Amino acid sequence: MSISPMQAATDVMDRADALLAHAGAVSDPLIADDIRRSAIALGVAALDTYLHWALADAPLEQMPSALEGLDVPFGDLVELSEAMVQNRDRIRPKVRARGVLERVILKLTFQSSRGVEDAMLMLGVRKAFNKIAHEIVPSQSATDIRDRLNRIVHHRNQVVHEGDLQRQSRPQRIRREPTDAAAIATDLVWLRALISAIDVVL
Image (cartoon, rainbow, N blue to C red):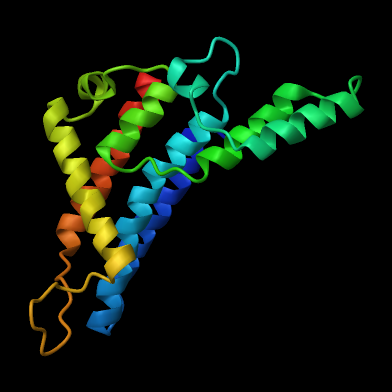
């Protein structure tokens, strides 16, 4: 039996929790902070992982229009058509098409609220956050879910793209954004609840 999107996301989420727990045992405060930053990056990656795995398994019959409209490189279409002409009896077009789908979606991110909505549309779910709001525990409004996710993803982006350095107009020395272990732990719990709610919706 193949691994489900939830199993893949849980693996990543568990690793994020393990990193955060390990940070408390590290004596160097700068390294401990960086481990906490890595934990939030992995937590966001768990959401991205779930949606990538769900899309990779999306049914190719009666596709939602958002999935049908996915941009596919022209070279992949040529390669598929040539393979079919050369080997009509043994070629499995849908297997090849799924391979193309996986390559295309690997270039996309499904982390921000917009990314989640895009992925859910490709999976046939409209008004995703309204549906997620009905399933997430504890109950939250769709707006609150979007806002919190975007805040967490913004923090993740600061970490992975800017090293979590503070922006200063005329810096005299390097300053990093402070880390808050309790806040990161709360965000990881929330991300796990969000992924679980998405799983129920799908």
